[in-house]
Length: 400
Ligand SMILES: Nc1ncnc2c1ncn2[C@@H]1O[C@H](COP(=O)(O)OP(=O)(O)OP(=O)(O)O)[C@@H](O)[C@H]1O
Ligand SMILES: [Mg+2]
Image (cartoon, rainbow, N blue to C red; front, side):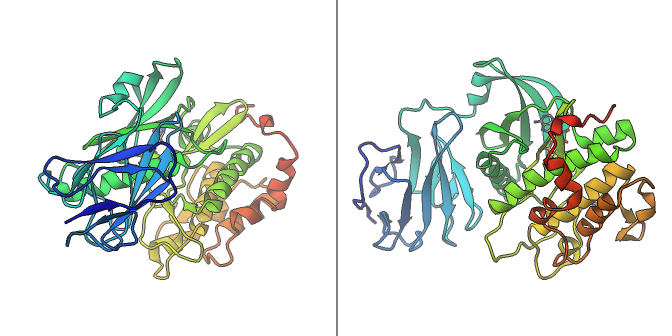
């Protein structure tokens, strides 16, 4: 067994290093100088590890940065042999974040002879206690299927934040999936900067818990607003819809499909004027151009027909259906489905005074055939939204 670091274009200082554990005989220290490092058995990798449990092109370690500027690594698994972070397997061919002090290995056993500790240069070790050092946990403000959401106070800036605490399953089969799902949520949030996308600040994780710190939306979610008011008037519904469309257009352009768009996942950062943030990236997925997603996921009532029943896969148009359901809910106070046939729309529930442009907009989103359903880019050119683009969003206030 041998491990060598091939020389590449060098920068003056490594941004991180992989330190072999004491029992990893034959592994050498690897200094990460470039933005990515390819590890594998084949001779053209940056780091070559000649061992039967290592694939020819086993994994890639990519440099990333957190919002506070501190370095972070993302491990991209590329081999059926398995890559492990903190002895949990990275989803095959998936991605996982690796922070200062985490272990990288090629087996789930802590005694495995091929184990590194990942250290970022010049950054103090955060460990699982890092959250408490920076934030004070406050009262609970929300509850999701897999998480509890709390207010938190940033000790450094004094700003109020929200922290989503995800408890990952402790059974080994589950923990891995949910931990990697939670880390994918972090990865997606970390990479999207848009005024209508919930702003990510930091994430902390240990073996059982992932804590995601984001901006605080003090007015709760859109579902509670609909409950309070019964329905939203058309002008307010239009302002919310435009903002959701802008967020979705950004996500879809970056190759991200939300897959769980619904009123509960649209948060209110301000009520007068009405400003929203699209949240909850727990089911979001990356989608490469020309590919489709498989697997039914989402929330009953909001899920698109091709996601629920389709065999050919689906793409970002699934979010457009869910947007249509959410708009229908804002205007009527109920979901569009009819008992027994959830993908038929109960058009009679809509208010009589709804404009023709509003009805047309809704019909184009609640189109069961995704091939002819309106995509977000086209919805921005629809007459119903066009008029709003020339007016400031600050006009809308649902309580007037
Ligand atoms: N940043 C925030 N500011 C204010 N409230 C929030 C924030 N994030 C989440 N919440 C509240 O907590 C609820 C649950 O959050 P979220 O949807 O992210 O969790 P989840 O476990 O993924 O939910 P789901 O049941 O949809 O899977 C939200 O509907 C909202 O009411
Ligand atoms: Mg949610």
